[in-house]
Length: 578
Image 1 (cartoon, rainbow, N blue to C red):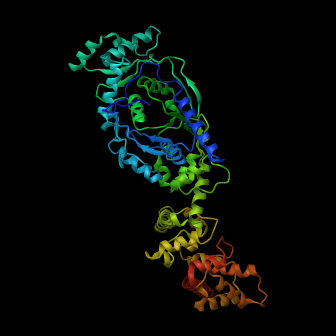
Image 2 (image 1 turned 180 degrees about the vertical axis):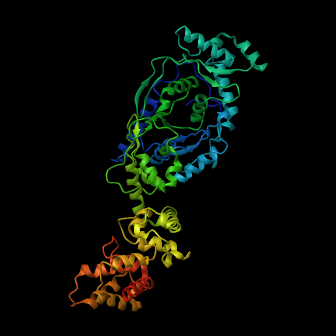
Image 3 (image 1 turned 90 degrees about the vertical axis):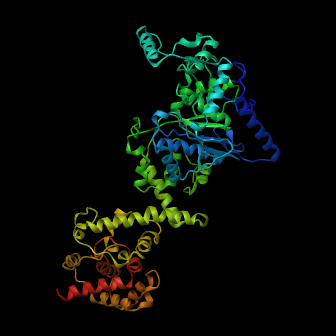
């Protein structure tokens, strides 16, 4: 690494002083040292993360531009940076805001970016909100640093000022195009003497600063995902510093990555073509480049380009659908990489980092929504039925927000418009009365939680619950009972046994099994088969002897003694008036 001057500007070396292999020699040296240490310490299996041993620290960064809101692809990039740092020994994940494109800034984008990253469950070790040893972490607050580095490049002849106006540049492009030549900037201002350039800059002549693109040939490097890469054509003289006093992405990200000790630049493959520019800058400064890893871009299931206007790209789509953030991250981690075999559903970012193979595929990565549903259901089942004490507070809150409250909202919505609800069975589409437990603000959340959490497996969504088991949410309409009683005459002995069980309060302290046992005992030896018993109980509890329902014991447990008394009284009254 080069020595830094007092102002934080690295001294330039002469052209060609840095290897064009993107730090491969240094990486090999580091990995060799780790292997030698491992041999001395005994047989230990180390993971390889993007070409580097996990025993070495990875400092990775996510550097969004607040010119828009966080989308699915950006979140995936942030995730892989977070995971690489997390999986390494002593690594760090850095959040940096690249707000140099002042004309395109969106007022609330930075705040939303941070909010969305936190919603997804990502956290960072350094950033604009939490500080760190290499701040500031907003590029608009680092302008003096960029100016000093641009001056260094000017002083060493790697860059020059360009005074061409936008109109002149456009005219040049048109003339070059007419002549059948490349429309790349032809280096018009390269020949301006240094003294004249300095004078015009002091006089306030508008200008940009350009890098001499041919100064280091055609840099090549080995990408950790795409392998060896080298462009066929040399770089044009690209802009480093704009006339508004702000750096371009090319300069700012190279300077910041170096000064922030970033070891791995993990970003979308659209930046692969720009990496030779960045390597040339590293060489001009005499710096050792980081490891580059370019992620395949997300595409539609049919392989077509994914538009930012597509709902599947918008994070609000997943939030509104109630997808668990950790399930979303697990899914994203498997878009372009994969988990090791037989891993449990990840519950934390560290779990995902431990589960990931860090073996990446190239090219377009197709969105697989079925896989998202799979990860979402696995995570939901894990937090419901496999609690972890250290995560209990967080996961209890998630259960409330993503399951219980959403179910209650759906139930309330159907209650308000039951007559028109297509979720309800047709005979239930009328004014409905919620069961007393749902009418109580104090008890309603606990009641709904008991419906989905007390039976392991076979989870029912709010829609499925309304469609298949409306009797758990609303009292059975008398019209439904009348329709059922018109086709079946329930056995009075079963109704009597049920009434006796309801009268015995002590039978209702458990999960419904004791009430069911009492009914079996009362009917023993009377020649009534089990199916008839359950069909009759289903008629009373669910409104029909042949409808889909929970087991009798479970209906006892969920609906409770008082509600069963109410329903039995309703059935008996209708039978008496038949």
